[in-house]
Length: 440
View 1: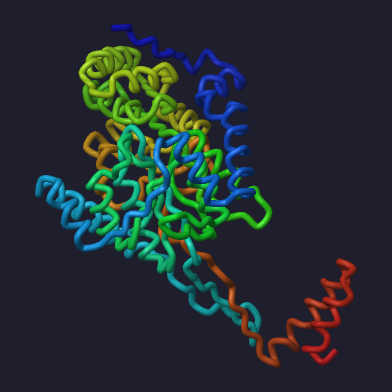
View 2: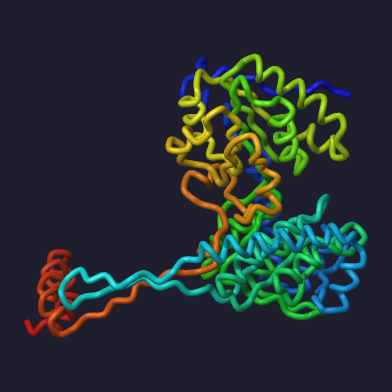
């Protein structure tokens, strides 16, 4: 067994460049190889359609894409394959996700009169088709299916297309079937990677049916999936993407009284996701930082996914800061996907925090609870995206439109103002369109 070699950093000793370097993401997330492979897959799918998706799926997944219809018989079989307690846990999680998103759906605004006779309001509408990517591979993340498909349903999206990589034997985990059923999906496509994202972006015909072109792409994934979403959104007329949602991240902030075993367990809960996941420990106490890293070493040796966790820990950081104010500076500079505040007064830190996908306040707010069953979606921005973006909500699956209504009197008052401003910009046709309504 190798000893962990987590990089220890004294924040006070760093200049601005050193601080940026200390918080750098794993380099493989942006390697040229990832970009080149994604581009090749997209070019092939654009040229050859469904056959290209099949060929890449066989090459990379080991199996051709397959559509699983979520029928009563299929759901019953999946239910029989799991212990009743597992079935109930999936249902409770689904209910909590639904309750939270129903309570937070955006509502149309009231009418706002800015000038007598000129009223405006903001209205919300669901997008037409959402492509939902659910990670699989080494672990079937059925929880991500709940966190995407349920908010989309609450928002009123008419076409939800869910894709997920097959297991090594080409099957799908029964929990994924039950999650799809709880979310009200008609089907689940077994296809993963950049080829799945390309299929959602272009729309393709496959032997089992059609994957329609989607208006927006959602979901976390590895470096290839994250790059595929980015590339798809850069295509002329291509779909938009929810956010950079690549390999997982967690920052844990502790003080001298934080429980080492809990902090270590939280760090490992994300490290076991993926070799490219990154965990960062920020401590105001040098002694507790050492205790926690010792506990990480003890716990990692007991994990079934020890090798993956150790690979991730090669990119971990343990940062010593002077106080909680400085810890907030580190948080905002990094913009973590997940942030755990395990300090004596965590609520006091919240006003200073501007960049985090999800915040877990206090010792009992385990990030794992949020991953599975608390209610808010666990699909969150990575790679610093939290500095400008939030996680998945019902609003993510909707668009807002302003609706403006103007009476004759309103046009008479506001038309001359608009016309003058238009001419100030040199746009005479604009000005005349206003003049015709205002009687000028």
